[in-house]
Image (tube, rainbow, N blue to C red; front, top):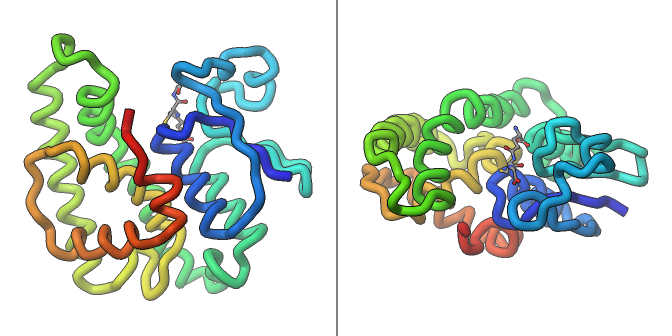
Length: 208
Ligand SMILES: N[C@@H](CCC(=O)N[C@@H](CS)C(=O)NCC(=O)O)C(=O)O
């Protein structure tokens, strides 16, 4: 049995749940983080000393793993050899770079928008931070759009790891009524991703 700890509305937990559903794996989820707590308990910190969600345990291999992108990579390599995992390093790298890009280029401005608008009371919001973060997200989404003008998925010719890493972030950004450029290729990708049952079940849920 695979166990995932994490609240369902966490952007990073969503990546793991979406991947599990795409791979049609059986798993149980234990709510943790946010209003559920648990993630600062000694037993949880022994699994993930960062006290963050998600965390995954796979009884089949004895692995306990944290960091959402590492979990997604592991699940694809372990259980998706014929589906999500691309055996050829050159093909796999096309999607994997978007995983690192999501962390390195998008997470900071994304958090500037998401934490402000979804997790912070209106009277405590920093409008300058929101404006600056929105503009930076818009710039970064333009880079995604340029790539999607040339290939159907962020992972290349087929749906894959890069799409899963970016998808929950895109879902939030495109549902926060931000002033964003209506990037046509990004919108088209988002419509195709939204049509996937695994995405509808795990990602397209209320943000708060
Ligand atoms: N780099 C980590 C970040 C994990 C993270 O920041 N998780 C947030 C939720 S998205 C968290 O645990 N926040 C504390 C909480 O929910 O109580 C990952 O990708 O797994």
